[in-house]
Length: 496
Ligand code: ADP
Image (cartoon, rainbow, N blue to C red; front, side):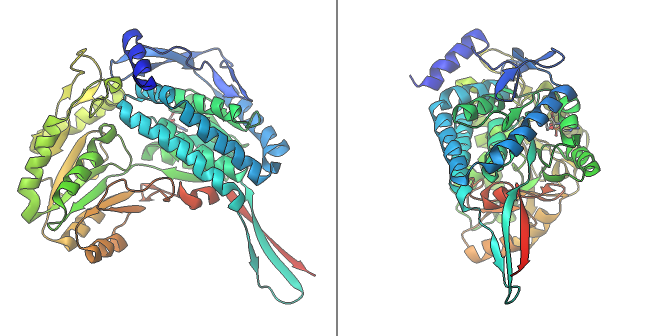
């Protein structure tokens, strides 16, 4: 039996896991909250608390930022790039060695199916591997400023980078922020979401074992108001990477403005998936299902708006409904096809959207109700839901639900599909399914989105820059652009 399966059985039997990290991770070790407070983390699959963690406040944040500042100025920024790369590479190896435990912890904390958590852990290892290889390729430029002069630039680390991490992809988001920050020579203070604190703590401890000097990567746990807000407002922070809701992103940007701190904001989405009549039908069906039902739709880049060409519509949507009804739901540790949503609050939000839609007379083609883990009768589950033929201005088409809810709009042709797709306050991701590559790339040029997937939704990995336009935010993570986000250019111009 694979290691993750064995551990999953322990967690299912006991309702918890042994040896979960206690305390914040500050200055190279776990330490309790300054005020001695704790809070509970819940298992969404059973709706029961499974462990305590430190509930931090401004004092804990101050200790973490001071530790990061010391480690940045006295140690990390001067560590040779190749050595930084070796630390990150060792971290990638350790993540792989401990993948089973990390995945089970992630599954229990977030609710997602174990196979998805395993994929996230592989992705986290890959992020460290990718940026390990990039550390010593961060090179500057020279400028032709004339005879008798020398002009050149190099990339300096920004300093201490705050990472505000959401609950839907805890280890993935932590890794895609922490790895490039460390690669650039920055120190980090990360604040995982209060719903999912554990894998960020485990990651910090793995980095220490990989040889990262004390203080270079710190993790403070607690709520957004008590730990997140003081972190982004702290004058010792030089950069904030925030992934979360639009409303909180606006607060973060305002707080950062007071110290003129740079921010990268990865916010919400309402991403369209355009399916044209000439698509490869099976591929498109698989793609649309994964785009909305992976992680129970709790993905900023979920493909939550299907825009399908009229001639394909009826049979395509009927088949989607059939597949949605056949999806197995259950506790993430039993590895169903779809798990619960992450919290009671999120379940309430999703249910509220559908209740309001019913009130407006919108037809729900399938799903549209709360449900439970079939084994235990517990947990925060929502049925895979498809809302057919939704009007462009409807709340369900315009607002991010962040749950397993797909809307369907009918397009007359590719141009009409493009207009419907771009009619959104968000612009994070867009998908296109067609066999006609000229049409696909023409649409890709004109779709307002940070990234466009052609014939495979979620194609690509850490190599591909990721981020949004409009209310989906700005700045790019992942890829070499993500690394440059943690650098500042210093230009030198000299008369010889
Ligand atoms: P949600 O509403 O789905 O919980 P948020 O965008 O509020 O999503 O949360 C994303 C992350 O931002 C979490 O780590 C949360 O604790 C943190 N957070 C919430 N409010 C603030 C804030 N005012 N300042 C900084 N971080 C915050």
